[in-house]
Length: 315
Image (cartoon, rainbow, N blue to C red; front, side, top):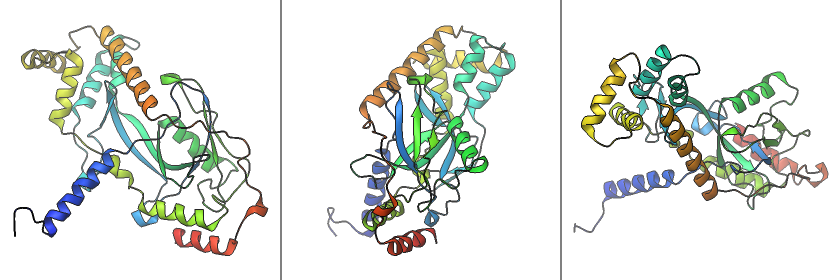
């Protein structure tokens, strides 16, 4: 075999590398950060083939300078299929020390709140009004929208809104802009509807669901040393290792961080806002016209064949 020929192991390694690179290109859909509005979406059910029991994926993330880092103190399977067992997290340790020593409302207390792990929830959705409504998108939210969905599913009369046959579209109502935006007034559609009324769209959607990346394809853990170094740079704003080591030692061993943090909080807030604005502009989705989305029952085609397709997916 010449140096340019590839065997099966080489080919497998190539495909694995391409798969990882493809996963890195994945981005979450989100409404424009600088605009309020209503966006008609549909939450999709769990994929049983992936052994999913719920329609969302929960993980905890630390945000530093606008970048998310998986909290090490959680047990999850990562994007490579490796099980990460919960372990001590240096950022959580720093947050605990700040909360233990800071007065409520102080700069240190605000810094702890900024650094602490945040609950994040990832969903598969389709977006009404997209050129191809069968395209699977991934949408990530915080805890408040998840709690709203929990209330809708457990304490309202809307029923199983994620069901493909008898579910409901969802009006994602964005109020406010930037970091001040919320989805508190979002609500399911008044009418129950099949997700699509033609068998071709149903078949295409089910195929897309079967081929969609697993939720854990978005999970990548950094080791404790990397998180510690990231935290050190954030706290000191210095690239000099000796200075960082001295200051981080002060942070870890004293009762309080030795440097004032007011300027750090302001700088980080500005950095986060700028990063979000750039991401929104880059991935700015189409603003959806939410009028007249409910289809009449008489438009339905070949109900028996559609039912068979959906039953196969649910089985």
